[in-house]
Image (cartoon, rainbow, N blue to C red; front, side, top):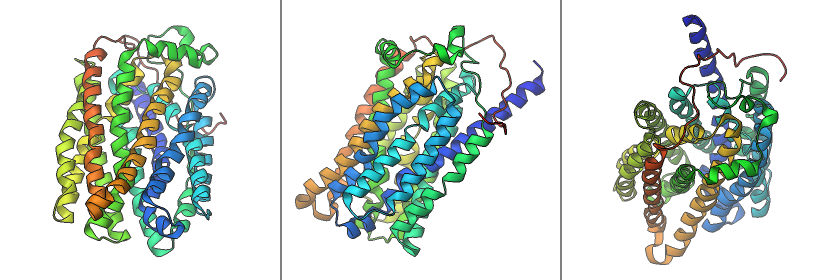
Length: 444
């Protein structure tokens, strides 16, 4: 293969992951906008912190986790591009519907609908990226895709706060939701499906969607792969506090420092954007380089980052000035975000190509069930429970005790690091990559 052909394939793969990143950004804009709108929603609908936690996490997680595996089963057999495009359309429409609700339960069910749509966006994207990049570049590619988390969350906070401040929270949902529809069209019209398993030494049947195994067969395979469960548990515990922070930090800045919605949007939006982007990129870059010599680095890098994040975030919670709190939270966010690229790359390494969408959905099931379903609600519950003792500082202590999730995550990742070095990985060391052109105007 000529050098120019390889370079063309690399540029095409990067362009493909850029389109998926844009979709992921809108995924998290729609997912996290509710955090900065929590205070006006609470006032308008007369909710308490437990209800906010249910609506912000449990409602989303219920249908996200229950529909992700069936959708992933379909993605291992049909066009992943089409599934992603349809999913973007659904979550965008349900986000817009959140702006029309009149009660807690109407908002709860609208958020469930957002979860239904987003269930088809992430796992198929993971599998798609694994077929765009060879093993030695997957952690960096997954990290690039994972930038959708901090960028989308920050934009949700920025625009949600700005629109709510100038119009109202209902308009914020409607405008942000409808803005995602052109992205669905972009994915459908420009992204081309790459060959499955094109960089792997998997059997030839792995390249045939019709030969894809059932959910039970994949689950049986995963049962024999303890590193998968430890990676998933570590990511889930990390997400429990990370999602909890994403949802509750706007309220923390408002209650602790008396900031208005505009200032809250600026403070926490920049924490997510600066800390999240730097942490995810650094984690992916370091993970790729260390994993060349030691596969366990896919778990060791996240463990070190989270261990350092614990004291940093604890100090940020009790900083005397909002600027010092902002600096500490930004650094803590950077350390706590380093796991995204290495962990998702590690998941793709330990299963063959025809199992990746289902394996990713099982991973996301665990991550979101614990992360979104438990983390946001637990912090809200503890805040209400400790209000009598700590009064206005109840949310601070709730988040402080929530750092136990990071401790559990560190333990799980350290155990996974030992096992990963002994797992069989699916890669192709000798075959030359064929260029893929992810952009195509043809119908898929």
